[in-house]
Image (cartoon, rainbow, N blue to C red; front, side, top):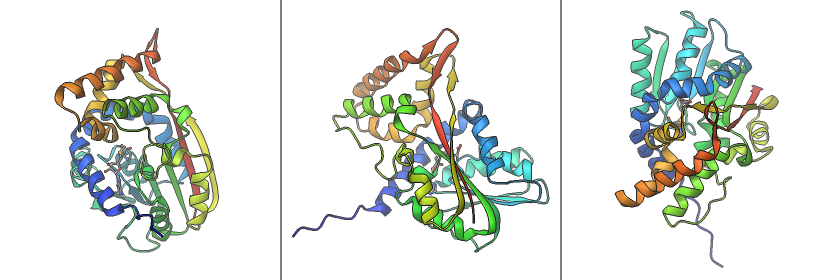
Length: 287
Ligand SMILES: C[S@@+](CC[C@H](N)C(=O)[O-])C[C@H]1O[C@@H](n2cnc3c(N)ncnc32)[C@H](O)[C@@H]1O
């Protein structure tokens, strides 16, 4: 009987770190557009995690720290936020952004979200914005966040919801795979962009990690940009999972893939600019 090889999660995460190190500057460069796109969901995430003045907050997969800065402002000088991320390049940008904003209550820690080296019961709240779905074993990450929270502490994570509610992502992925000569992927493969969009999965994982009062809310989050070209500029600079696929191609083939993606994103052009449909899933709970 032949055993099925276990997925190599360490290799997966090493690749993930490398990809995000490469995309970090691009992600940070597009902060204004990302901020506008995620404004409503970020405010809702902080509210649903119960973050207020004086709170001690754990931010997992914090990236260049856009939401970290919001948290730092919200908790004020008597609170603190620990921004953690797998990518040291991302996290250095978060540190610098906090410093430039004059926020002295932000600390950073390079850490795999599945292996958070933080003291037990040391945070009042935990959040993760567009990060949890990249963990190949999100339950491990949730167990770690549960352990890090004090009893009664709040958590809220934001991930992409169902694939049919995020068609611009589906188009990017399908087009990139087609140009790379790769087969279509199951969108719910662990660690993928849409992996936690599987209906019911996020709630199930939160409960399995021991959280109480688990509830998910889908939030419409259209991405407004002047044109499809602007969206492709963002994707080319900062959308690490797509870059990783296109990066296998020759420069000419890559150009053809990007051009095809831009053309196909044209379906979302409206009289008032390009409006990419996205839906986010906010899952909130308490330890
Ligand atoms: C789409 S970015 C989101 C960054 C930030 N939270 C934001 O919303 O602007 C995804 C982030 O997840 C991080 N990430 C991916 N896998 C991770 C893991 N296993 N542990 C911690 N962070 C991870 C990446 O390094 C990247 O910074």
